[in-house]
Length: 267
Length: 329
Image (cartoon, rainbow over all chains, first blue to last red; front, side, top):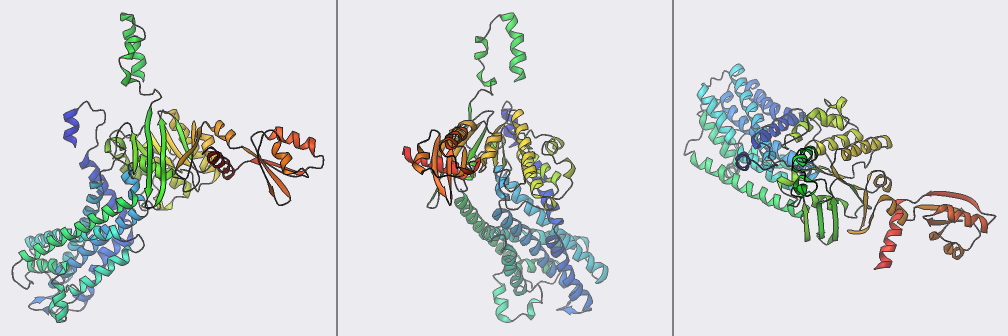
């Protein structure tokens, strides 16, 4: 956009810089949620609390041949990233869409891209805090030793794997009403977390639940994350990435349908 | 504008060419009374509900035009169409000669809309900072805050503001981009008298800066206080259009209530009476010339009692206008 403006030069209507708008939009989206304890506290504190209770307090045990304090970092990391992404996108979108704020923004020259960009970046920041805090906790109190490369790889995997959940959040945000959004999110979030083995090691889950897990995105993300710390079930990793990519496309499609429906209802 | 006057003087002297030389540059005369926004036979339906039908309306540069109408008349729909948030089912509309939904149009437009909830954890200054960043030539943030009377509240979170203060923030977001054209959708709804008058002053200051303003309201008083021109709409149609004085005179501006023995037909035949109805023990007379009617009443009925004269409410105004509308059709 900036290039068009300079190319034509004489146009009196210079457009503002897209990058600058995106940066500012993301900054305020972050501040907005940081100051909203229902989001900031629950997304960061919940996974950490689980980690302290089931990882640190329950004592040193092993799952398979790996210590629980290590095993639970990717497990609760996936859980945390999923929560930060789902709530970070869906709750805001549903409320801002349903209560008129999005319309105020759409009446302004704000590029709609900046709006979604900000929500995703904000979610990524909280996801990062989640994962880093879990790793720090494990290293400080759980006797976990993660080489820097492994830690970076785990963080990178979980952040990349948060994209499908941001997309899912947008899909939910387009269909849920402002009041029902948090409930709808939990309806997906909690059962999916359980069935994917984020709360209880996958091998301890009933057989039929293990079957269901194969179609759940958190299962695939957690397998990728377990693999980074050497707690994976083995096998090829590509299928997990592919499933997540497919799920992302599906959710984007649903979100697009929701967007069209919104336009039709309002416009 | 300064360029037009100063520049012209300089070149007029050597060339000794008076007026004709200027006509070559009509583009530098932006403040001529040109239409900046236009509805041409626009119809808009929401499902089976017809929100606007064959709507013709024009906003002229530098004026404040009020769209006056009851709830559900189509005021907000008109604003949404002007902002490109909705598309007409039929007809054509332009803002600054272009598509109302385009970014180039939005850059020159500011809007204050009715909104259910604004993010509450951001501070006033932060909201203004963010919205200012959307525009290429925004006002300095301090100036926006000053115009909207938010200087002292700039560090307060939105959720902690009173109703009037919240409206002022929405007003600030509408003006921060220094737009040429402003849409204010029921800006004073739910405000107390003091807050309303404060906002009126702020709106007047915009006009002094040469802005064009479209305001919707269901208060005749508000349209009267602010507007150069009032467009009365009802059920999606323009039913009257004119200066506030013209509109008020057409809406049988006063209401006389009194207890009298005079038969209704006699009153109805008096000069200046628009309508008469009985209301319990009294009669209610609609008139645009209350002094005249009172004189006749006092002469004809020495026993007359309980006289009250009041401004006709908007309800009566609409009744009068819609009746007129129906009679013409």
